[in-house]
Amino acid sequence: MRSSSPRASSAGSEALDRLERRLIRCRLCPRLVAHRERVAREKVARFRDWTYWGRPVPGFGDPDPRVLVVGLAPAAHGGNRTGRIFTGDESGNWLYAALYRAGFASQPTSIARDDGLVLRGVFVTAVVRCAPPMNRPTPTEIATCRRWLLGELGLLPRLRVAVVLGKIAHDGLLAALRARGVEVPRPAPRFAHGAEHRLPSGLVLLSSYHPSQQNTFTGRLTRPMLDRVFRRARALADG
Image (cartoon, rainbow, N blue to C red; front, side, top):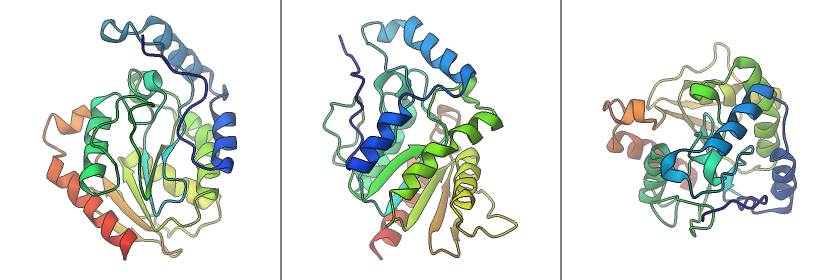
């Protein structure tokens, strides 16, 4: 039986570890708490032998990264099951394979927290940490959850590049940067796949469609399209 211990395995520094321990105890959004725990109890047939994580999912990766990847939220039977962001679902298969091809990941797959995956130079996170019903968090839930992204941003001082996966992640990261006192132009940079914006702070914002099945199955997002974004992130980080 696959299981998820209460301690997640993503933190790579004492400060991130302390933040993670607080994060995984969060119960601030009643709707999200009810949903994540119901999914963890009821499961689905193909994962009936798993003990679901069923808690907020922390960020994962290099504790001193140059690149930040920001997604929407854990999948009900992905991160909510495994306890690692973008792990155990098709979106994660696309993301970590692209990170591997760009030289950021030690392997192209992310199946479970104990699968040996190591990220180098990149930290992966999300604007919402609990799996939302229908993958649609409310604006209030996004705002409530922002404290955790703010905490991570404060502990990742050498960031040069932020890759946002989808418009909600794009808007959520910009809101978090403003909350930290980082200057964001008005009107704000607009989301578009492949767009690149250099903020006054020097941080470069790269935008990509989210690797959801809705986008990948329809061909709206292809592997070459995603690879171009992460090759550009690599070039900017190394430059």
